[in-house]
Structures are given as C-alpha cells and as structure tokens.
Length: 143
Image (cartoon, rainbow, N blue to C red; front, side):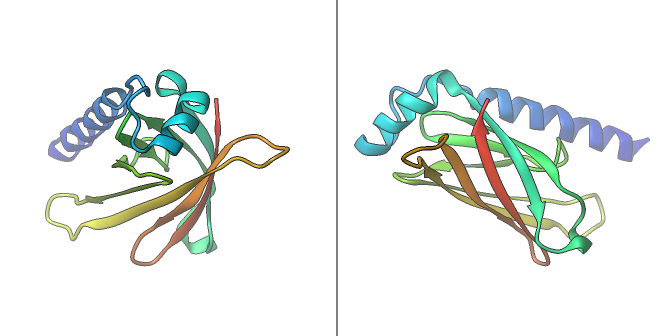
C-alpha cells in the first residue's frame, strides 16, 4: 500500500514538473539561443523522440518527451518513470535527478544535449542520458 502511494506521488510530481515548465519562450537565455528558441520552440513546444540504450542490459528503446521553459526544461526519458529537470544554457541543456525508493540506494540520472539545426533538415535536440551503469542516446524532434 505504501509503495503504491509513493509511486502515485512520484507520478503526480512528475506531471506537475512537466506542466510547470511550459512558459513563453521570449526571455530565453542568451541572445543567439534566444532567437533560435523563439523560432523553433514557441510557447513551450514539446519535443519527443527515441531514447536508445547503448547496451541491451539497460532496457528497451523508449520515447522521451521534453518541454522547455525560458530558463528551465523538464525531460521524461522513460515514459513517466523518471523526470529530469534542468537548465537551458546558451547552446545546450543540462540536468540531473536522483530517484530513490524507500529503503534503497538512489539511482542518479544526468541529461546533456545540444540544439542542432542542419542546413537541409529538421531541427533536433541531441544528447545522452547517463546513469552509473547505462547510457542512452537521445534524438528529439519538435511535435
């Protein structure tokens, strides 16, 4: 019963973090990235795409969902299991979180990514999620 309640609270907090990060992008950090964000990330647009483990022992491919605010982001790489909050830098995203079940050692996750806009392709956010034992490649496209 207590475990189920803890899981429910984590899911609720994850949803609050994700929706709390949806802001107008007009005040984005840095002039260059601010212009890019205004053009490509209007009104807290969401980005999604594959989160692919580098090792088969690290689980299956999932679809990640990222929401940006003017200075912060929220990234859900594993389908509502973990939400990684972070900061929007001049030309990159960086965040981390630690998830711990009662009575267990916590699992730390770190997300780093850059904005990529190929000359003849669709804008992307590319990066990695890392933990102590696993690394996942991330390639997000605007929805």
